[in-house]
View 1 (tube, helix red, strand yellow):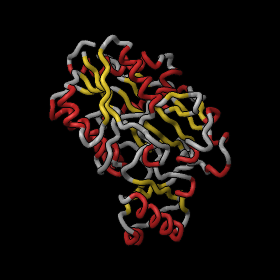
View 2 (cartoon, rainbow, N blue to C red):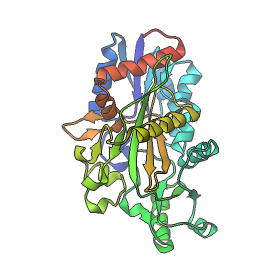
View 3 (cartoon, rainbow, N blue to C red):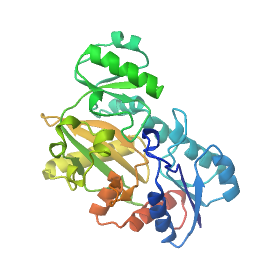
View 4 (cartoon, helix red, strand yellow):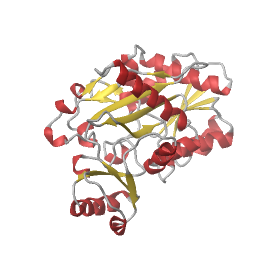
Length: 331
């Protein structure tokens, strides 16, 4: 079988390429694919993606593409694969489109009774006067991942600060801005890994330990906290939590995963306030796969998988096996 890794290569460390895959990650995934005994191909997910897929004719695509432009950019490669009849690893067109849009994701899950912080989508400064906000709130680009555009100064506590920060973000990101009630509490990240013919596996839960971070982080896991101030000491995996809380989080993660029709894998983030209420924050149906511990460039998902006892090659095999099972292929 010819398996094509399709992604956007990270060429620099700017904020707008932070969610692209660096060369080290590409090599890790390549090694994992080749370890299955199948042929490895690489295809850059640029604006020639359809022509490249037609030319290479892979039997299966390992999709890691974030897309290069547009509000539904994470759906472009799944849509191209479906149009050409090529099986692929990871979430489908609808799931990637909805999940990239924070507002739509929250609407879908709210319908199903899943608690999420109150929010509004602000398209202009005029929108501020339309709504009554319960401060503090946090501002996030509505259609970005990897904490893009998020740092401690995104938490605003009055209308003047809201207007100033909103003006800056509207100018920089050219999209609606999510104004979300800020939940100042414990943050958990949960990885889901599908098992053919069985209930999906929940990987060891990771907790972000804000007490180990500099005070200026302000209980916000933003770009500065993830890069400049990053340290393994900031993350506890498996989280040191009671079994009852662990089971609640696992059930919630699986509920979110299935409600949004994610497949193969995903990572879901939650916050818990001092009353024990658990709020959904966001899902990444194509979670990061970086794992360069020497350079401190690692993603939560493979970190949790390693804590579950998987090697990187085994994780890749599991993902390929999940996709093959769904399409009726034999790995």
